[in-house]
Image (cartoon, rainbow, N blue to C red; front, top):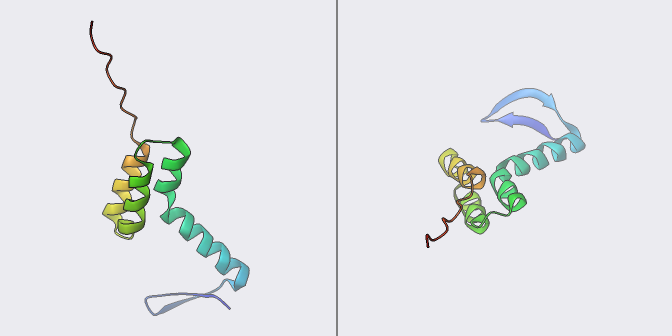
Length: 82
């Protein structure tokens, strides 16, 4: 059985195999959320967001920077004045 044991503390929650798989899937989706947003929006820097998310996403700062890059408003180039 898959138990919820964090930092050596047993919380007494038995998830079962389906619950464990569900928890693992939700964790991966949450971890990759900035990359999923970037690819869904089709932003120009989506590969940068993916690399940043995978490489530094474990730190909260890296994850937040990736989320910022994925959700910021796209820059519209100014038309040259004639």
